Amino acid sequence: MQDKSPQTPLLSQEEIKELKERLAKQLRGNTWLTILVIVLLLYCLMGAMNGLNKDKPTSDLAGYPKMYRRLKNLEEKTKEQEIKMRELEKEIQVLKEKEN
Image (cartoon, rainbow, N blue to C red):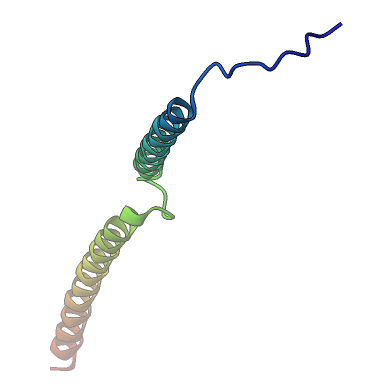
C-alpha cells in the first residue's frame, strides 16, 4: 500500500523557477545557433552548386561566357565577310579589266 503521508517537494518553488529560466535561456541560445548553422550550410550548398554548374548555361556565371562566345562568333563572321568582300572586289577588278 502507498504511504499516505504528505510528500515534501524535492525542489523549492524558487529553484524550479530558476531552472525554468536557465532552460529557456539555453533553448533560445540553441535556437539561434541552430538557425546560424542552417544558414551557413545553405550558403555553402549554394556555393557548391554554383561551382558544379559553372560550365552549364543554367548557372548565374554562364551569362559572361555566353556573351564572350557570341563576341568571338561575331568576330569570326566579320573576318569571313571581310575575306568575301576582298574576293568580290578582286572579281570586280578582273571583270573591269576584261571589259577594257
